Length: 506
Image 1 (cartoon, rainbow, N blue to C red):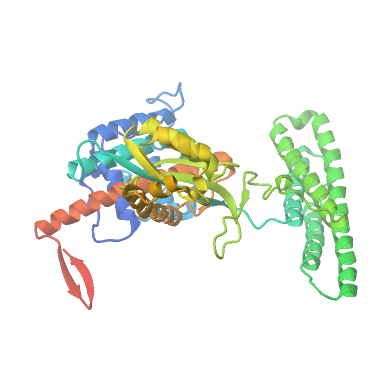
Image 2 (cartoon, rainbow, N blue to C red):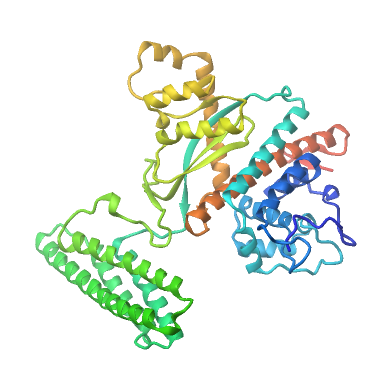
């Protein structure tokens, strides 16, 4: 049994619309709570959000019988707060159990003020969201924000959207990869998993699992230290190269010994009648074995034979296999390990669309991003890009999708291109394009610096949740400014200067 929200309030529970949020606090928490409060108070938006949240309930599940699960509104609130504040689950666990205003937003009153969330409960429930559901919620929140702008009289009833598009790297939670430490990761997992499985199934041969890992680590460290040596003396250099080869050879021979024993144990496990229900674990072990053999082959080719490994054959994490090695040429950042994410922001600070770029470059996603955004926002009139998105084909196709395309060309310009790129509209769009860097910085400071979720599904969910949380905070900022302005106008919030600083005093 799982519901979006309990329709009947408990004794002492505050109405979400009446929750008082501190307007003088400059932290991100009040703004995200103001945005969530606005979503709840707007009946039309709330109905759309609740209807979308109902899609998370599996079909055939009765809402009236069974063990009650966490309300979907609570999961949405906790997920948005976690991503927007860039917290891990341990921090969220503590705040959800102790932050008074957040607990009021979650529906806790005097009666259940002692209710405490379990850490695993938060992990299991927040991960229920899918990127598709989050994308629908994001579209509803952006629509709510645009309607708030029209209500404030900032624009006419029909908003004309001008976008700006750019990409940035969201890092995966991995260490710096080398072929020998990736091999150690693989054999460590192989030995750990096969030892546990054999012990459970009563198969011997792996009672020294921890000791075997220690032996592999000793040889790995020896090869790692020797690889760092550099010398201009030819004699010493030749001697050290021989020692490096010998250390690497000893390392991979020990690993191959463990892999041979692993394959023997796997055959025995597959023949065992008591092996029911462990097929998933066996396939996981076989996957790490495959990683180990690949790394052994690359070490032998690179160190022993002196070959150069092509980039497309390399893998940068055996745990996060989607990780890419990205060099964007930024000062002080030689490389980043993760995936590119392309975002399209409007002139009001709302992120209209995003795309996770797996093995894609900027010029390959320019047209798909605009086409997908136009399906959702027909009033998108123009969009600005940087030169990385340019290609002759993109120039042609984007002109058909947008009324005004601001995409500078690379290389020497023709006279017609010079006239176009020096026009007033083009220059104005180029000047405003840098605003997307502020959006990217905001996202990186509010969750999208490093993805802490596992696998490519977790990566997509993490990015979608961060985009949604950022848009809710942007909506909250609009509400915050409006309420502060109203209080000042009524004389309930005054601004005075003290010691050269402006302070807000109620």
